[in-house]
Structure formats: structure tokens, C-alpha cells
Image (tube, rainbow, N blue to C red; front, side, top):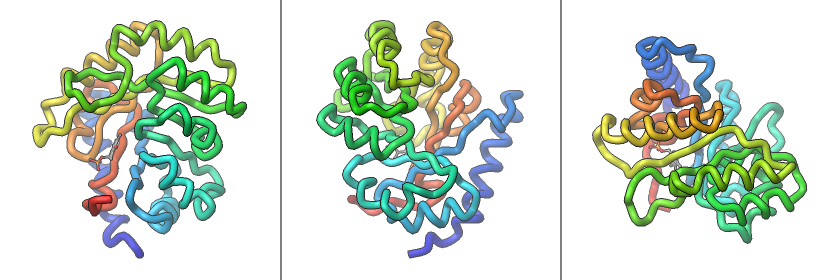
Length: 223
Ligand SMILES: *Cc1c(COP(=O)(O)O)cnc(C)c1O
């Protein structure tokens, strides 16, 4: 199954990133385009890889376990877990992913460490009041940073957030700004924020990693 028009959509997304970076007087080379391939088959990852993409985001450990034999070994490719991770799946996640962006508890950090592989991690921060969102509350961030820094196998890169979905790309600006301020307070360099609909806002607020699914691969069928 080939994704129709992927090359054109990739060019359009890259142009959006460059324009936003220019407006914000930022170097576009410092903004990682993470291709979010949840629900799409391994062939979509391969196709994106062939177009030059190297960083991929997946939401579910089990789903990616099925694709990993086909794409896990692509030279230079890195896979980020961007969905909520239960600590009982931490060992499997550490095997499959080079980056876990959704660390939100000391217990999970410890389980990832115990898997015995060096991985990059980010803390998922909950910056909205929405009940269903996972992530650590901002007040819990200092303690969680200390826990992660106590785990020798984990390299803490930065913070990630997922604001409630809104059609209005301006709506998450406050969340993005709060995430940046929190990262600055703790001397963390990487900010994973912004998706298909609001990546410009996120880049203006300092994002170093935009997670883009729909704008590259089209609408996801309900999984
Ligand atoms: C699905 C998903 C994305 C991509 O969203 P799009 O709107 O399709 O670009 C980004 N981040 C997370 C955490 C996701 O679950």
C-alpha cells in the first residue's frame, strides 16, 4: 500500500516548518520532523524513509512490535514512542524504541532503566485540565527529573506535551509557552510539541520536534 502524494506532502510540511522558523528567526535545522506512523503499515515507514525521513513516532508498543522486524533495522532510522506507556510494557519499549517521549512517573523511569539499554527520554507534561490526558503535572516535574537523572541508562533530553485537540491552531499557544518555560527553568534543550494542525504555533514557541501524522500520511482510519 503506497501512500499517495507522500513526496508532495512532505515538501509542503517542510515548507511550513521553514516558513514558521523564518518568522520566528530560528534555524529550521534545529526542528526535527517526526513522522507519526501510527495505524499505517510498515510500508509507509519504508516509503517515508526512502524520501529521506529518519525519525518516526509510534503510539503503541504492540503495534510497533509488528512493524519492527520490517523497518527496525533501517540504517540511521530512530523510533520514538509518543503514546502513553504502561510500566509493565517498559522492557519491550526499551527494546523497540530509541526514544521514549512519554515518561510520566518515577516507576516508569525505573522500569525503563532496568531494561538495561541506553535510551533517550523526554517527560510528558500535562498542561491542560482535560481528564483523559496522561503526563506528569507541572508541579511534579522537578521530582521526576531527579528520578530520571538517577537512572544511568536514561538520557533526559527534554519535555513533551499534547494539548487537547482543537481546530484553532492558536488554542495550544499557552500550553506550548508553559512547556518552554518549564524546560528553560530546568535547563532542558528539547521541546516536543506541535502536530499537523498547529506546528507553526509550536515552532514560534520554541518547538525542537514537531510530531506530524495527518499532514504527511493523510487521515488515519479508526483503529
Ligand atoms: C497521532 C499523534 C500525533 C500526530 O497527530 P496529527 O494531527 O495526525 O499530525 C502527534 N503526537 C501524538 C502524541 C499523537 O498521538
